[in-house]
Image (cartoon, rainbow, N blue to C red):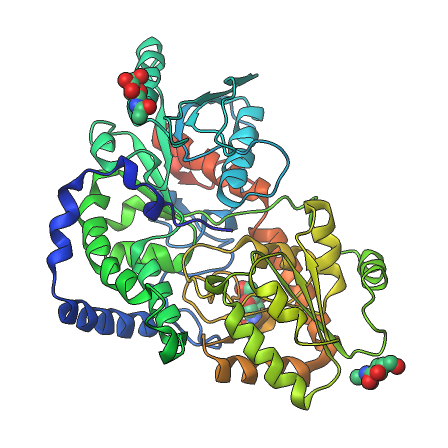
Length: 492
Ligand SMILES: *[C@@H]1O[C@H](CO)[C@@H](O)[C@H](O)[C@H]1NC(C)=O
Ligand SMILES: *[C@@H]1O[C@H](CO)[C@@H](O)[C@H](O)[C@H]1NC(C)=O
Ligand SMILES: *[C@@H]1O[C@H](CO)[C@@H](O)[C@H](O)[C@H]1NC(C)=O
């Protein structure tokens, strides 16, 4: 789950941007139409080869030069670790995971910093506990986590800065890293050596709102605040474009976000970098037997011809209205299609009402998730949120499953690199049903073949180790330009 952190940090914002709200609604709508046109231009059809100068996916095995000039994910390079340079990093993060429960962004951040600390770097994290209860600070080896929550459970920026300044005064930090706006821009102004990772930008969030609005039935419009959210999106976007240059270095989690930061937000290309998210490759593995067991355990009939799976919170903005309707349509003409739904939420009941071809499993333990992925033939992610890089897609790929997903720029070219990885559709029912027909036409044999291509690619790009190595090299490069050269003799 990727959280658009920008939207959750109102408490840290000054009210100076509210004057933007007075933009006329008509202006906003025409601007949206313009921007969406450019958005669609950015979506390259899956079959398209990347243009030479575009932000490209894929391995760049022969790259030779300054890493700051790379317009492709750093994950695709192979960084050696046998150097003696140690970093002292400060990290600002909205929250820190408490307990074993699943948790998207904060779990991702915790994995990264634990790995960097284990590699001998001194890491100081300023954050708040995810359960919003009081906890003592963590000091484990090189990892120091300071819980600096205010009464509402979110990070108290003043308090975080007091501790930051004390530690920085003893020996200066090499670099500062913030997960989205956890370190607000008016504070970032006084921290020149700062890099920010954007997990979702308003340019993308605006498109989410647009797709939600377009998908609503006209009679629902009066009940839903989507139009108001659309109206809010444009001033938020303008605000972002104005304050983003306050941060020195920018890291994006998809090629398309990198391209938007350069071409729409107008940030200098050498300050924009792509490091893709990774998942623990030892937890998500290809295991045929586990898949068979899982099907038996949950009573998937043996005579079905194709098992589709969907995972995550069963809420509207994850695209469940879309999947629900597309699935009910396709099963009218194709009886052997089965759907496994992992997760809970308001749409669970509606899936159950679809009859014997759907099984709602509820929320799964993280240990069961890998088995779930192994039990299916194809993973469906109907999300209406183009921002971020959805971890479930990557998890399914690690388990050797092809994916069926909307054709958002953040997905096409970064995750679903081309048609050998799966299927894409526009976020509407008709396009979705067409894509489902292609999946059915291809059948399990072809799906398996695509699945193994996915798995191979995921292992080369989307592992926690790859992600940590890329971040490590990035901060080393920021500390000492010698490390910006690639390859070094120590690289693999
Ligand atoms: C799809 O992309 C992968 C990874 O970049 C590449 O190895 C493969 O040749 C491509 N296949 C097609 C059909 O373009
Ligand atoms: C934040 O921390 C500062 C400094 O310790 C403190 O004075 C202030 O009351 C805190 N604010 C909140 C909302 O907890
Ligand atoms: C599978 O078997 C069940 C029970 O025997 C039957 O009701 C159902 O129609 C069969 N489905 C298909 C797709 O053949």
